[in-house]
Length: 302
Ligand code: FAD
Image (cartoon, rainbow, N blue to C red; front, side, top):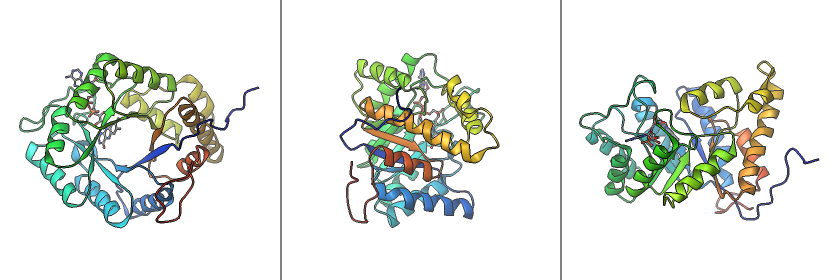
């Protein structure tokens, strides 16, 4: 019988990156910095901080990213959307990141203000397409630019081919790396990867993995983002809504299974949507061979 969670066969060290969101309250602020402190010794490639819908967290995202740059050895990446903003406003945000020593931006279009059921309309004085934003950031200075990718298709996309074409335009504008929307069926990631490579996209396409801290919340979020929630996943969390302890164990097993499979199939970098919670992510990183390093040690051991 095959073991449920088998040891990874991967030999090479796996790179990881962690995504956080800017905190809204002092309690959430504590939770964020505790999570950053717990995960930092694993030596992530970078840590990224999201930008609230419509730029609603502009100042909080900036403050969080700037503090990471100032107070830690981590390489921060700032998410930035162009929805609802003029080019001048967006350029100003990028300029301030440059001044704060931030050298990596995750460049996005953003959702329409009324949500994804509404067609997207660019600001008349704004960047019209995501690739225009990518090109502008590249022109603004020595920035690394990451962009999104949708292995199951963006909810506003006609078909998966359109998603590949959208990614290709962003790559042609200078994107250095794509980070995928989360998914639970690894085959959809590898299918998208094949399509992207066939379209001549050569940049790394880093799988985004979300540990299911709360199944109901994750399933709701997945519905909005176009990520499929397989029946087997729902079945694993069935009946556990009020059983936090078992849910956590199941979440760890499910995420471990997914990540180990990705690593065994050759993935060399995994991006974790941490939801500002470190424990589960730390455990999964441990499983794939990462070990906390003493301060000043550059590389995490395999
Ligand atoms: P794009 O990649 O430009 O386009 C999305 C899809 O729309 C394309 O894949 C394509 O299928 C379709 N499309 C676009 N243009 C065309 C066209 N001309 N013809 C046909 N189809 C087209 N949102 C936030 O508000 N803040 C964040 O911090 C944030 N971080 C994110 C991080 C990651 C890794 C991901 C995957 C998403 C993130 N988002 C964030 C969500 C994102 O802003 C939304 O999904 C938004 O609706 C699309 O932005 P995008 O840059 O992904 O769009």
